Image 1 (tube, rainbow over the protein chains, first blue to last red):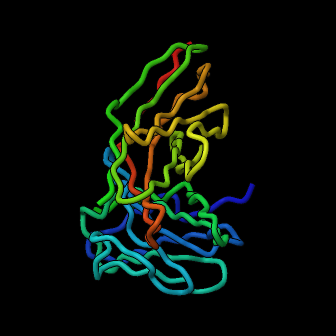
Image 2: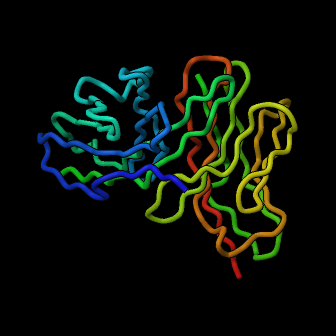
Length: 116
Length: 115
C-alpha cells in the first residue's frame, strides 16, 4: 500500500538555526498537510497546500514557517529560526482530490524535531 | 470553531471482550469524522470515517464506529478486543460543508488490551 514517507526520522538542531523537514506524499495525491504534536499534547494542524499554494493555515503557522513543493514529489516544511518550543513531532499528510467525495488524509511516520 | 473531546485518557479491556473508545465533537454544520490509530514510533493510521448515510460505519481490523447526531458522538467499537489492538486512538473532525480541510484532533485515548 502506498505510504507517505518523511525524512529524517529525528532531527536535532541548535536554537536559532534553520531546519527543513521533508516529505514524499503518496504519488497521486494533490492535497498536502503538515501537523505537529508536542510531547503529551494534541495533534495540531499547521498548514494545507494545494495547487502550489497554501490553502489554509493555523495561528501556529507564523512567519518563521514556510512550505514548498520544490519538485513533483517532495513537500517540505522550513522553520527559519527555531525556538525551543518548536520541539515536537511533525507529521506530513496527503489526500486525494476526487470530485464530490472527500478522501481521508494519510499520514507519514513523522519527524521528531529536538531543539537544543 | 471545531473541537473534539475524548474523555478517557486510557481504556483497559481484557482480550476477547468488547471495547468502546468515546468521542464527542463540536462543529458548525455537518461533520466529517475520523478515527486514527497510532502505534509506538509510527504515524497516524486511518481506521474509518463517517460522512453521511448509515450511522454505523465499519473500518479496518474489525473496528466500527457509531455516529449519533443528537449526542454529537462518534464512539469507536470492536466486538472482541485483541492484544495487538493496544495503541493510541485519535478521533478527528472537520466541517463537511466548508472549504476547510484542517482536521481537529482529540487528545487521544490509550487502549490497553490485557491477555
